[in-house]
Length: 128
Image 1: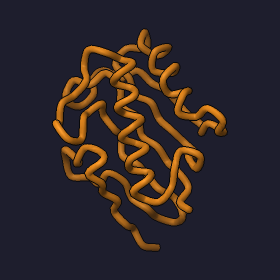
Image 2: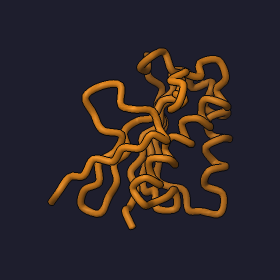
Image 3: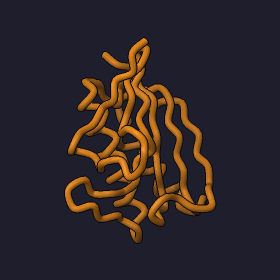
Image 4: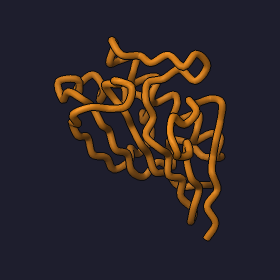
C-alpha cells in the first residue's frame, strides 16, 4: 500500500510535522483543521460560528485537492474547548451535509487546542 501526501494552498499549511491529509487504501485521512485562514494565517478565535465555517471550508479544500468531497466522508471527530459551543458548531456542521448522508461522528471537549483555537475537526473520507 502506498501513502500519498495531499497538500493544497486552499487550506492552511501544516503547523507541525504532519501532512494536511494522507491518501491510503482507498481512504483519505484528513488532519485536524483549525479555523485558520489559508491566505492570511489568521485564526478565528472569537466567533464559534465563523470558526466552524472556516474549519469546514478548510476540510472541503483538502477533500477537493484529493479528488473527493463531503459526500464521501465516513468519519469525523470534532474537538472543542467548551461543549457550550456544541450547538453553534453543530448548526454550521449540519449545513455542509444537507442532502447528504452525514458521516459517523464523535464530539469531545478538550482542555486546549493548538494556537488557542476553540474548534478543530478531523475527517476520514473515501477516495474516488
